[in-house]
Image (cartoon, rainbow, N blue to C red; front, top):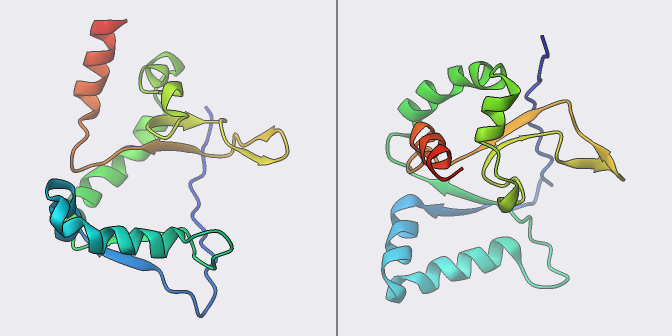
Length: 141
């Protein structure tokens, strides 16, 4: 059986300022152009312009139910990674450049060397329904 290690390391300079946007402000900005200017400014601050010292990181704060969603989601990670390859392929989305769904051995870390030491599943737990996504892909394939 194959083992996949999940490791997160973030190196942030001491004087760095991670831009934070409240979930409610983000939702409001997405539904109303009038309130989006402050969110747009924060996004620009996070990602900066050319030659900027921005980190390229935005933290979304105050997400409703996040602790309970995380508690339900994290124990599923080893079960997901242990699925047979054909089932993992059903939730792989190469058309998104592997930014949605399952990704394993797709990222390049050094030159052309692919990283097979971890697997990732990219989703929004507030809006994405994995089972529904799999059923929909089966209907159209």
